[in-house]
Image (tube, rainbow, N blue to C red; front, side, top):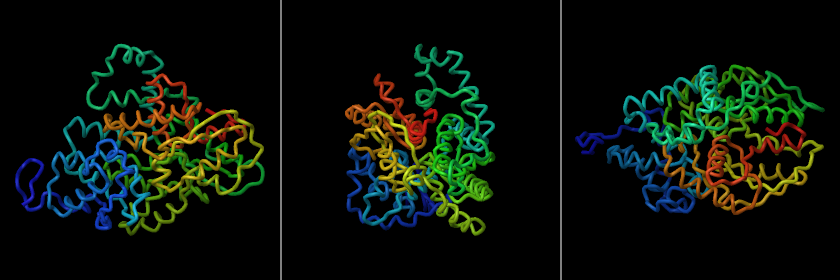
Length: 443
């Protein structure tokens, strides 16, 4: 008899993970060789077997078979996983760890949704804001007022922020300076190609990306246009569902995936270009996410094959010149969902190498997670802070003037860590560097 989280006995304490809509197929591929241990950030920090990929796979298998119950301890070990997928990169057996941990987190969310306050908070963010662009824009306007009014400075200077409930202090610490309404304006539906036209692509403008990092979207469109691509930006697009999937909200992730596919199918584009690594990795996984849906499986497979990270897409051919010199020393941080989720490592460096005057220096543990990991820095702030401190130490050791990366979550996280140490090092998206080289705004 397995023991439930509450201590009572039941024939099956943990029903198969397929009930959450995800399969644990592949759990038996793990041969427990231990090669993943040296590459797992949480194991490196804690040194405990259950906080390693191998240990978590053992937990998932035991839970799925009903041999153990979903205790506080089991849930904590699984929830502490970053889902950075570094273990997948080195696994000789090809264990689909990312799918396994998403299945586990979805089941945890299903079985242990928490109290009323937590459920309301998740509904407001995952169910309401991320799925409704207008409401998200309204929330951004209120946060912009919070900053422009001076209230944010007062809250931080007085220390009141530290007394906010739950993970709200972590949310507030990561809040970037929100751009004005004019600077967060949406992309035009179509941006014409410069010079000889190569074809038509569509870009994901995203949910949080569109209201916080709209400048990155505009830089992306300009750089693509300068390289001969007509750029479509459908106005009715929204969240791709990546944050929902990472947070265990499987049903909503499926709903948003279907909406995203339908929206971009209508553009007639040859490729869907993404400048946020977590979104790109998630959208490339739509075929797996919707594999059990007869009405959407084939559409999802075709769509996933069209998705390209911005660096991956631009590196297919040399950048079109002329490129202006940028006399600057930078280092490059590999976002987890680029290097491990999408297996893109050399392309960003190839692009940076084409910029005149730009010196790129190596970053130790460049492909280690910075602690952002979707919403991990909000749900697991203590471990996220430890990983961030590790990343910041390595950045400062390079002597670089800026860190270049390719994901908004990484940008916010590393900016926060550098700011807290008083470092003058800036953090830039790779499209900002390329846009500057083309004489763009670079913001």
